[in-house]
Amino acid sequence: MALSVIVNPSAHGGLAGRQISKLKARLSNAGVDAEIHVPQSRDHLCRLAVQLGGSLDDTVAIVGGDGTNMAIVDALLQHHGSDPLPTLALIPAGRGNSLAKDLDFTDVDRAIAALSNGRTRDIDVARFVSDGVTGHFLNCMGMGFVTEVDQTASRFQRLGDLSYIIGVFHRTLRLRHHKFHLDVDGQIVEDQMCFIEIMNSRKTGGEMLMAPEARIDDGLLDIVWVSRVNRRNLMKTFPKIFKGTHGSNPAVHFLRGKRITITSLEHQILLPDGDQLGATPVTIDVLPRRVRYLW
Ligand SMILES: [Mg+2]
Image 1: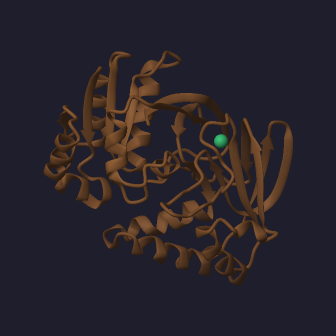
Image 2 (image 1 turned 180 degrees about the vertical axis):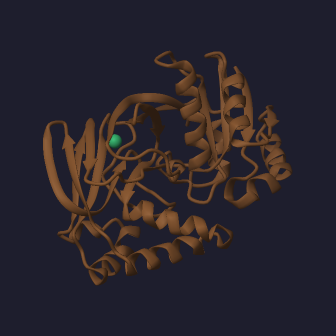
Image 3 (image 1 turned 135 degrees about the horizontal axis):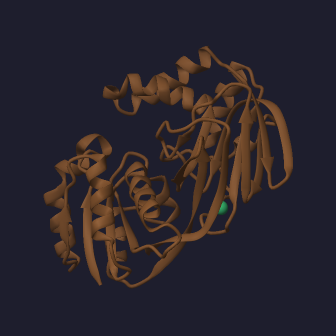
């Protein structure tokens, strides 16, 4: 088995790049012998993953956050189509590391130990098609309020985590609802909604327990949406998401399914794994246990 390590140097605001020598020492202490690759750009990151994961005997260890992981999985799926993928490993080094939490990688040492203990775990990948373009996500895809918050936060990116708090407050003051039509395996929902999140993992944005009952390997996606709420109601419910108790608010709805089509009156920008990419109408389905991680 050939193990290659790809570090996204810009993960966690550049922290991953600044800690490469520390990572080398930790890998060496754990008896892991692997070459470390540091791509120059996102395109280079994807090309490297395809190149280093060329054969089924290869293992590609990803050092980064949810965005890095999603970019690599998407690149491998675009390249390999329906053929089997190389095995992956994940060393959490991003801001949120939501997927790593569902894999029980609560710290870096636990993730490094997985590189050599021989265990694996197969997890689901969500696939979406928007305007004829196919993409993938591992954590979640949001639209509505959550995309609008991201749009504001990206203007304040230099402020790090604070940018999201600014985004939440700004967009709550200008709270908007959108009419969405959902088809979940033939079940129809039509409502004015604040936002929709299609969840593969339980958490989003690091610690927000959006879908407490979701499982990353059950072949199903957990759909969470918030129907019409006022600002006060939204702000009161928001902190509950960190404990996953937001479902006590009757405006919060959950549904589970395999194939979801979402349309809306106006095009709504999609937010798969934190990237603004594509717009409604969108169809999402599950590729059950499509990716294998060392575990
Ligand atoms: Mg699931």
